[in-house]
Length: 334
Image (cartoon, rainbow, N blue to C red; front, side, top):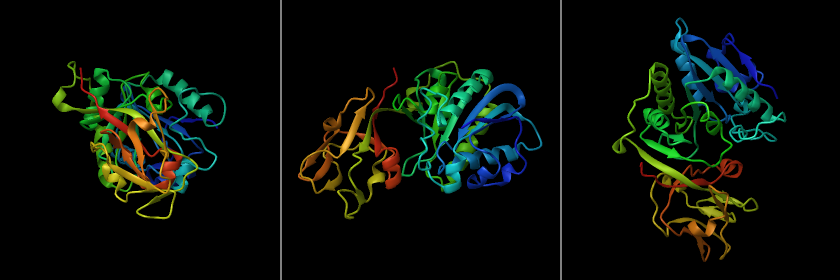
């Protein structure tokens, strides 16, 4: 699979929806657009085919500049147009487009990821943004992979709620962070237009940003959380919600727990098995820490210590393709 590099927008592109992009683009595509300044804003969208907010925001932005130059040059990476056609995160047989950036090679999806990183060496962006949606109830928030001043200023330009993570380390934002201040923005559910407006306003702000402040981000201007573990449901277990017949049945309001500090003993699910934890929980070092966070009390799966989850979802496909959630703790700025 090869990366297509264009120097202008294909005719009609701005009139199509995300599920129609495959009619204009043969696959992953980088579109370089000249602006008033040579400084480059890099934007990535649709790494997951069911996360439409990025395309809608970019489309709105580019329509505003159809008859004039952008304030900065823009390099737009459009990812999984084949999955977007079907409205799914990824197609059967595909790798997750946001898990292929650690060791790019010439094989499969890794081929275009290596090409894109080579293009970034030439482009030398000054800001990089990866736009995403999620399927559960989450606030709009920004993610960074470095705690340097400019990265945090960029993140707070989108939201005062910021998540710092280093695992998984194969995401695009991790690779982008080696080039310039980079951020992943999580814009809520894809059917919520408020996420489109928020992303569009953020892109406009970044296009007009002249420089980052010289001072550190003030404590009162940021709520920063550190992702300390990833929770996967064991693959051989069937999943249900709200008393459905399944080996593991979650509480119906599961995703309302996102970004809430849960006390020890919080019920998440029940199972017919009176012992054993149905989760694989790995910390940033890849170690199994399941028993540190969860316990099985006669079939009731509860938390063992206070935790704050993010990205809990009621979507079975997402749980199986990605994970159940991430666990976070507050991270005080030094």
